[in-house]
Image 1 (cartoon, rainbow, N blue to C red):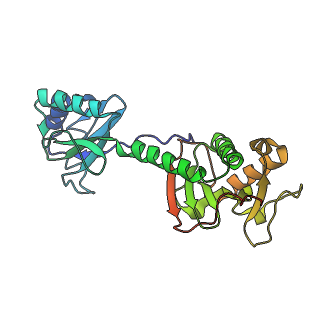
Image 2 (cartoon, helix red, strand yellow):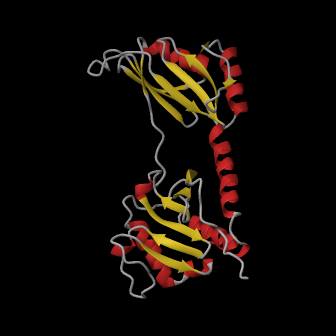
Image 3 (tube, rainbow, N blue to C red):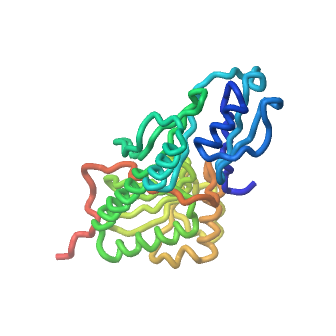
Length: 282
């Protein structure tokens, strides 16, 4: 199966397919692709957006209750405003004007003849949250001495190239600064992490105790976790290290796979922390 999941096709309950299809064409700019009242189902589309219109007979086994709510995610505020103007000029039923909401969406709402709703939006908060998370991460890393700062950045870059779809879960804890790599936003699904302290930088393999380690690179004696000391990001390209990383990724509770880029999330920050730099020698 392709790693890119297909777009969903909502089935919209309508009273009269002919009238509904005509409205979607005139007011919303859709094209009627197939079907009609006799079939009880019609397919409409606009660009890559597809929908089915279904009448009461076709949906008898499910019920034919309106309103349904369909979200349409556009790429920018300007696109949202432009679509609102186009639908307004076409006499679409517009229930609200475009507005940037406190929850981070620039949106408006429209309706069809049967009261089914369309919330047209652009998510402006997620990119801003991610930029904020990067700034916070930079503050955490800045606490370390220059050599460790560079090493953390280099190892992070190497892991992001190797596992671009992984979510980065950040913890600025008492003992360690940690960036976990997980296929989901659940910490329990993490496969590995960067762990840094004043003493240095390590890779922690969350389920490393179960991994084959013929080169004897892993340290630790617990039931689950093992760690690998890192002196350079080049270490990650060594065949024996690369094999361990691949094994950790594929044996995680949810394996790390290719897909859309993961997100950066600040999970927790401890009020009290051990020093991130070694005390100067007297």
